Length: 293
Image 1: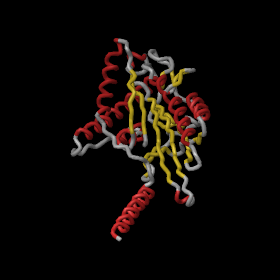
Image 2: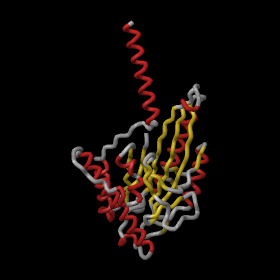
Image 3: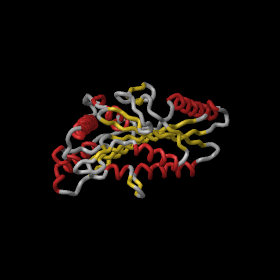
Image 4: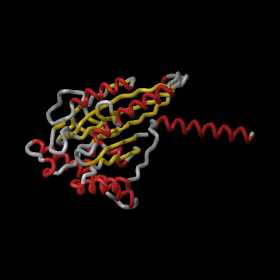
């Protein structure tokens, strides 16, 4: 199955701490990676092989940046729709990894390239949305040859959204103010998509246009939000009474997201799935013939 985890909340509420962690305190991303490789070690055999790759990007002022690269093309990387594989980012680096140590090293390198800045509410405020994509391939070896191998693929999206913020609270001016406006705009677009998907789930017969193309973030999370994925949302809340309005907004956001109903399915190649169905049908017909004779 494809899966997605994204953290939402106001700036300084603990999203990056929950997702990536800080110092010796591991966040969800490294813990998930660690458990993934532990599971692979337990299942690995002569008949089962596994391949894992990782991608890490950030969306800064509606421009996609590759966090594994120190240079970025003018205007950012292009996001396109591939009819076979779905949404893809052209030119994004994909690193093959063979252990948790390798993933940790990659994430550490990429985290240093993230865009952060100080505001009055957060000394290390994320100024961009960060998306970690872990691709997982399970290959079941068949003795009849390479063409007979069975392959299953899954993608895991781990998303650390930049915090929603009010200019009067953060004291943002100049570039910080522009960044805050871009963050709030993309979060509003995400909210519009969640509202449309919730309405679609509650009224199956109604035609609802889901505005995925309004922002790079919603375009990239298309599968995770309303398609073939199991999705979990983390709400980061501030206990301070001065943040009441933002806390209420975050909870309303989460309430809308809860109404979305996804239908995840196992990722098997359609041709391979058809072959398996025909084999099962063949066996059933053979059994029927043997019973009639």
